[in-house]
Length: 355
Image (tube, rainbow, N blue to C red; front, side, top):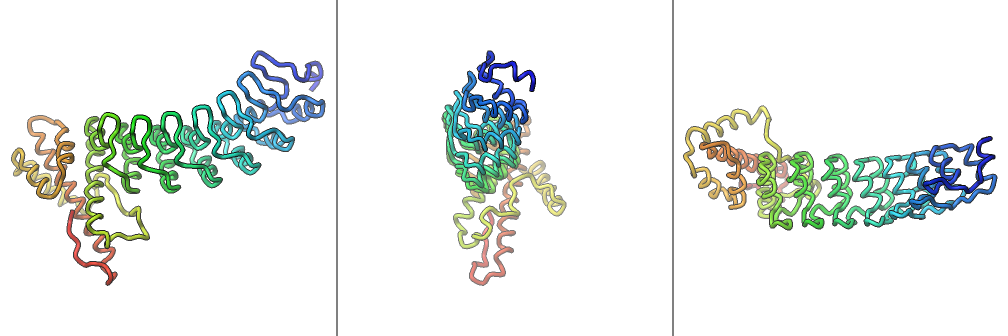
């Protein structure tokens, strides 16, 4: 405190910061109160356009931040990059500071120079708690930044499954495209994020959308040899088409299908059947025969092409056939599960065709 008495109140250092800035930045509440009582300039900005509010929020100094709010610093003041104090608190992943600023009336949908909202910053950090607080305060989930990326794009790109699920539940547009015309599923396919792809596929997405290279998410997964993801997307595509033909069997109370999965089946109860399918594919199916079966079971040309891009040697067709049979089995099992769920309702059809 004695050191402060020898410093000109509003003298700036090489960063353009005054003692008031430094007190806020380092969480020194007593020093802050002394400077306020001495009549320092509350609204001064440093060379990056930051006020004391930005610095306290970015460092997570809750008590100092509360004092600055009480003093009356402008909550919507922006720095040179267009960030408000709320952006700074979100970027620093300080949930308590975020809640304080939201409660004080900070605008939740203000955009930076890069057109990024606070929810974009939450998606970059992967903070589920911060993102939830923003969404509960009215944050727009579908705003796009200069790269065309929504918060969902960023959450997928940085592999934050819990945040992706939160954004799905909040009603994010799962078919939104960025400047590369990529949907969130394109990104999941590109990086082989299986858990995230599962969430998106279960929620329901448009599998026909193409990126700037003209590729669907299925083609992206196949190009990168992400075999498991290829099979997941084909399973989903076949289910979506089956559902269109059996609208009366869909449960409006459970649109996302809580028990639905497109991942590989490792269940004990299907192990014997899966072994039978492997013997069929490896011992009895000749080259090209698996394709005939696939087309008979309404696999599309795109499905077949994606499967056969996997190369394991001269007998790749055996693996291709096995994968096709497992995908077919998934459709049969899923259709049967749906039939069982609705069989007790006399108003629904009892006949249920397999996929």
